Length: 143
Image (cartoon, rainbow, N blue to C red; front, top):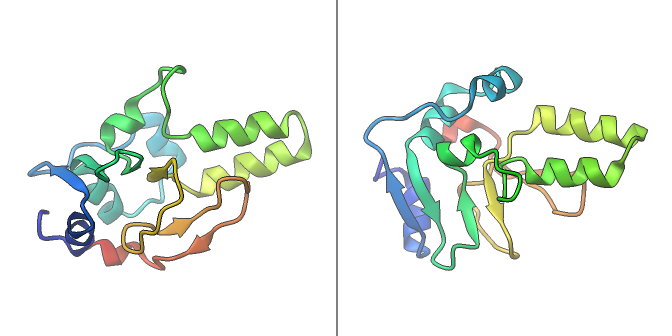
């Protein structure tokens, strides 16, 4: 995996990447049922990552350990969904939030504005609930 073009692009931009020889399960069983249609290539790509973050550690790709984290005092893999649900309250918007996140698996986080063209399949503005832009039209490009 060390020669993967996406990871090489990130390394050349100063990212720190630790990968595994073989992928480990990316998602919990519950998450796997929710995102059952994810392509195997995407699951394997992320499942091989032990760490993948920029030098400042304020932007990162989620690894299997991120999807396993459940401690509410830490930043969870679905934190944007949880914040959006809280903001929507018990309204029709809450159902729209749930529906959006059922169809979109977050796999990258940045806590500052960043420009990365290679690893993102979709870019979502943090303050929008259901708006995103395709930047990687097919997970096959992860091969």
